[in-house]
Amino acid sequence: METKAFKVSWIILLIVHCVGVVLSLIIFIIPTFFLSSEFLSSTGQQWADFAASNAKVTSFFILQTYEIGVFAINLSIIMVILTLVAYRKGVKWTWYLFLISETIGWGGLLSVDIPTGDMTVVMMTAILLVLAYGGLFIGAKAILKKASS
Image (cartoon, rainbow, N blue to C red):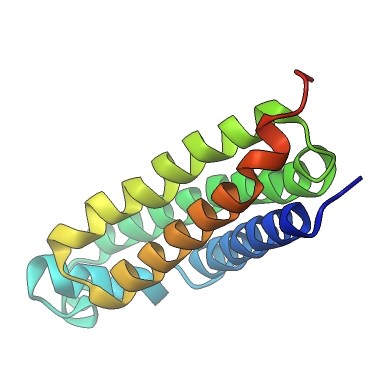
């Protein structure tokens, strides 16, 4: 039987993972959406100025961003499916998987974005990491006390 706390847990994680899908789609569809602000934060130069004077390098940056978007879409869709199918059923290993993947994913983004000083991206990432940890914390008792699955 699913407790209210566990239901809140998987819903929070589902929201975080759906936001991951949306952000991944943005990265894939509009690669310069985050790229331009992060480029400005790390170099002090406007993306448009750089793009105008470095067409080949700009194309490479955009290609790399598309590729990141494809991988991110893939991973975030898998996370949504795992949340809805395995975690929601209380499969114990998914709790550990989510703890590791949220830490590496959102925590890794924080470690890259904090030095660049792009505070919009830093705050968004930090909020998603805190939400993910909150969802895991809320569901920990219910899922970890179950017998191994």
